[in-house]
View 1 (tube, rainbow, N blue to C red):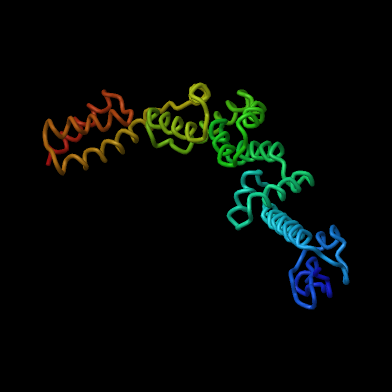
View 2 (view 1 turned 90 degrees about the vertical axis):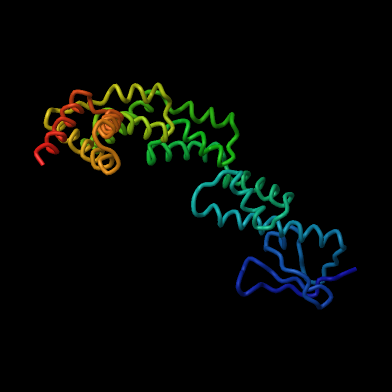
Length: 270
């Protein structure tokens, strides 16, 4: 029967030990394996014992790899499992390592999901649908997703959506109200808010324009459309396309007609 003839501590990793069997190097094991199996010089080992030691050491390696991965930020169980499998550990080893991580409190999908909700809500201002998608990517079970999202009240969603809507409106003063509304809708939908929340947020925002602002907006949008179509069309065809382009940007028809008349007058003067 094989006998341990020497045990030495590794220089580069003080937690690992080299095991020599019958005067030859056989393997290295983590100190936890050394303690668990009570390995000492002169101890006899059978094949089953060696296999168990190797298996336990693989679990410890996977466990340590997971701890390193978790050191940067919280992770879900799914993320850790995927990382370990990608690193080449067998599924049985990975599952054992995850059991140990959960038992020691390093992995907790409940805590992870709640932290994810707070981060996505407070830092990224996202709505429930977008947060649910993030949870799905992290492998969070559907039941837990719903449980966590229950804490995100409609009142809180509306408050954040209104803040985002007001910010978007403020940064787009040079656009027509129709354009601003469209940008707000697009932004809030991308953030994951429901149609009802988006509608209420829009109703809370003042997007009116005074006469000077309307004049500037009409002129800016009209000039772009005029330049674009004047190079390809003239007369009625050009005017029709310019009208359509301006109307799609939210310019009222009376202002569009005034702009067209102005441009035609400029052509006549030339």
